Length: 167
Figure (cartoon, rainbow, N blue to C red):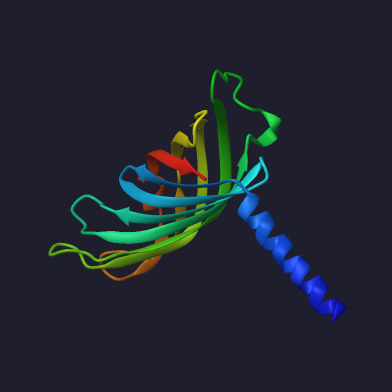
């Protein structure tokens, strides 16, 4: 019985701790637009999960995703200009992957690899924030001929403007 009570207390504490952390859901607009969810771990770390919609020029339509673990104000160097809200910068590393469905001129292709994340954000005094960030990714993928090789396309399209609701 004691083990069951301890287990129940630990489960309730874990759920409470997870719910009490800052979270945000938002939209990033750019060549690789995405819907993102951020889950904070205290005030200095967060997990960023993004579902991308890819519109490469003349190559069809694609979907993908990024997951990065980010450090907020790394190296203990916050942005010094804080008026009513707060400025923060962040950087992180994780993984990415996706699939492009192709069109009449290009066959479908896929990619998977390592992703980075760097950006700056302004947290308003109400529950909203604006950000500018870059999510580069490199890894493996296949080209138009179906050959697997090194993929660097993720280095070019990951700059976006974001807006998020904090809850």
